[in-house]
Length: 233
Length: 233
DNA sequence: GGCCTTGTTAACATTTTGTAACAAGATTCT
DNA sequence: AGAATCTTGTTACAAAATGTTAACAAGGCC
Image 1: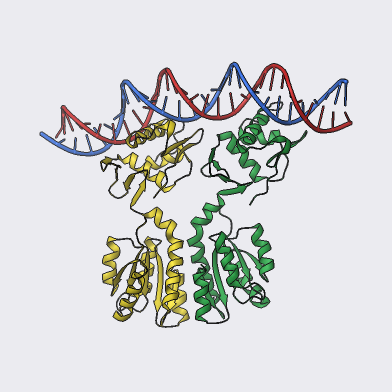
Image 2: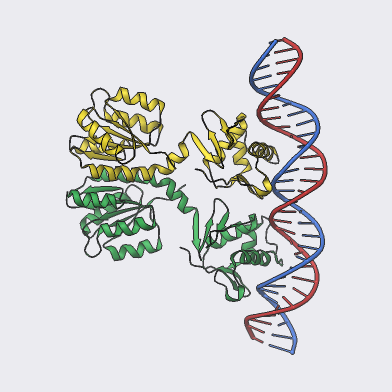
């Protein structure tokens, strides 16, 4: 079961915005509608959507500017909307890396077809990016089961280390008890009174150059367990 | 050095066909121009191009029919050309899986931008569906089912070895469990407690001169399975 | 300070893997 | 069809990697 694709609509006209959002939601997509560049940047800073639908004529930062910025840092699918049938706008948009350009008034069914096609095209890349987790300069490849350091060096993880790191990354900022952590690395139940987790955390810390005294990644919660404290990006 | 992308243009109007072909060739693409569906099918039967540019209004089998057929058997990029600004044609084309739809008279620069964007999108898929795969100095011919070594010697692969290598190459950098690998060589399910996969991997390693202690190609993920670690090129 | 918790290290036990040898099955050739 | 040959599957065992435990030092908390 793959999650519903997430589409971000950036459109300042409230009528179009609501209509388009509702239409796409009706086809099972998760839609976030933004009225302008500021609201959009807030969303894009926290999430990596699967597709952007951007009006070119936004007040403030316009759609072309957003296209340029997004394309510089991701391969997210981008569809531009425009009220004008202007060749120049269209060509500039496409040359900036937008995947498509649709003129208003657009046919909803046409837009839906384009959305579907583009999501199909970007499926492989989205899968790739979902498998990578970035934090503190490291990149954790959940499929290859290893980590790439800030210097580009690969850090091999043992099975238990992998499971442990995975559990941490899936629960950022949450204190996890030793029992909980132990359950994620071994399949035996509740071996209380064991120091296994401590040793595994130490080994993880060693591989990430994380000092428990000034920990930035794996924090200790005295009497409780451990927390993953690095911000994910 | 990756080979120039191959674009097949299917267009019955000789003027447009020649102009478009020449224009694209000027940007370094390899172009094959076809006057109609018959000529195109001949080409498509022998080669798998990277992109199709198809006129909708062909005499005989039309562009929509070609789109349907191609999309059924490959993920090749498809751009439709049309003389009409007809919503219905456009929507039908897009719903059949065409990636783009451009109306004549089109702006060449716009078409070029669309071609570039689409090739960028399909790059990952083309990489995986290529017949020849290069890695670590070897060339794996997936159709002929053999490998050519750095010294030019051909290495014959048995059926199981071929299936195994194919599975590895289709999932580069991803740890594959023994069950997963076993399923790709035999069709029985989950023969746990068997060393069959280990033995097959050892035989593959032997043919590629890959030492498990300093493995460059077939890595071991202790407790999990094996990974294909050689960079594809 | 006393008590409990955590960090660290090293040794140990267990699991997993690499390899060889061999048996069984499939294919080719005569 | 039968023999020869090649491919595939299985088992056994040594070697390597990993997980676990024990022991002790260091640190936090009352």
